[in-house]
Length: 286
Image (tube, rainbow, N blue to C red):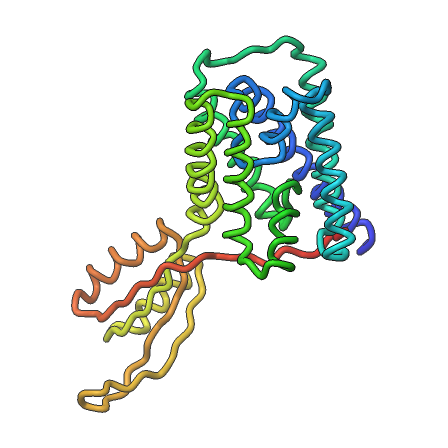
């Protein structure tokens, strides 16, 4: 039974990763390729290289990803895992499928600027799904890990630097406008991706000292269906002991909690901190 459940989890994981990669591939083919920009990805570099090499973007992306995977395994060992190998190979496969089905595709928006904006929004959805499944699309992630190991550079800075190098590669082929769009697209892609990955996981750590301790505790547990921890606190001014209730809630729960406390005990002492809710993901086929 346990083995059957584990197999179901593996299949579910594969389906989620496949859908995420399909979204990324669609963003690349339908928006990045028509814009001719090289926004912070191996696919963007492939678009530039396609002007020098008589191969489609999908084939160049496949070659680059395989080469980077090999270099990654040789330099960093097996820390990439099966998920990175799977997504790195699947991405150019999906791009190739789109090239066959939508051969001769030009642009959905008819605007280079709108194509870049649409690419950033769509690709961020796919990448955020991968991130939250403890996976990546390979490519520049591998480059960043290599730079982190040998140049002792932080992963975030390594990603930004490699992304900007890819964006600047547009200068080899395209005009100044395309180069500027590539650089701006790389910058805003990072901002939007941070929003998709982190902002929806932001929760609030609420610390409450109130005379209505039991009522607040009951409200958190039974009305918000959330948990709480109670600590003993001592006031520094008069050395009186109080109980402090600490709970972590999302945006809607926070609003309900504040409304309840303001109604029941307006004099309650409350401190609030933003926290990122990083959930544990089981290590499946990694």
